[in-house]
Length: 76
Image (cartoon, rainbow, N blue to C red):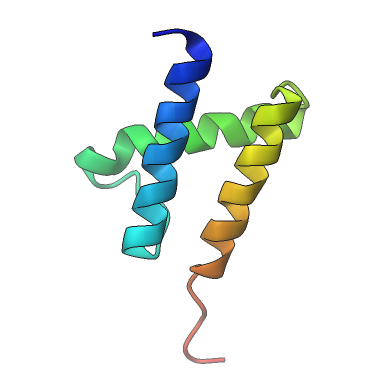
C-alpha cells in the first residue's frame, strides 16, 4: 500500500466515524485513539503549511464536518 492510499484509507475511516457518531474521535478511548492521532497530526501539518495541497483541501472538508457536530454549551 502506497502512502497516498494509506492516507485516503485513514481519511475515509475518520470521516465515516464522525458522520456515524456525530463527534470527533477521542483520545480517551483506545479504539478511537489512532484516528484521533491521525487527525491531530494532519492538523499540525496543515497549520505549519507542510500538508500537500490536495490533502489539505480534503482535510478542510473533514474539519467542516466535525464543526457541524461540535458540542454547544447548554447553559449559554
